[in-house]
Length: 283
Ligand code: TA6
Image (cartoon, rainbow, N blue to C red; front, top):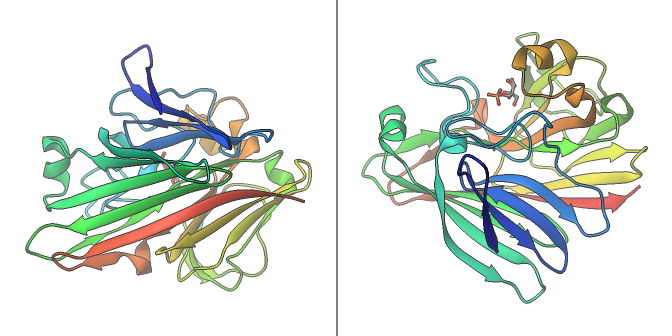
């Protein structure tokens, strides 16, 4: 584990072991890159974003926490503050199989406390090996219960958004944010325009079949009952400004989380863990 600093002083943890290389920004405990040796990058990163204080990185794995989507009163920015706060490394180890495990802990500052006044630990454990595992653990240290929404807002790299297929949420109830309606998913997902659905009560693996890249990305998860699938397409990307030229064509977000009907309530002393494992298989 080594640390490098960007031009404006952002700290990036770099891992390069027997299996893969990866980089993680201390702001957000944000996994920016993951690439098993001999394979193409698994995560998508915008060519038009870079770590800057207080700004979320467009690509990789932003951590949405302690709410997903709009703030309940719309008083604060969507997806919470974890992705723009500083975290610190509280442990790192080389595992027997050659993987590297790093544990990050959120440093809540005054601004974060003002948005969410509860006492807790938030830890993010990243294990880089042949596969990538990200675990988010929330521990209630206070004397009252609280509720969280969360997601690993993962941007996956694909050959061409119009030639991939996402499976694993068939039959799941969803809320479609583009059309603002609730329905039930019928079949696998293919893309031909803006897509933004929050699937509830989902625990199956999700897979992205990418015939042109001849690979399948698999996302196996636990402690997560929601899956969000998103592609902004051309018009929305243009408004966002940090997607890069035609960036939307080579990414899809498949996010493991707990949101909407699946938000999590933690009693005092309780810990909630969710994790996702990202792996690549030949297709
Ligand atoms: O997960 C999908 C989503 O909630 C979309 O609605 C879209 O806005 C996206 O996340 C990105 O949000 P951000 O705050 O990173 O621009």
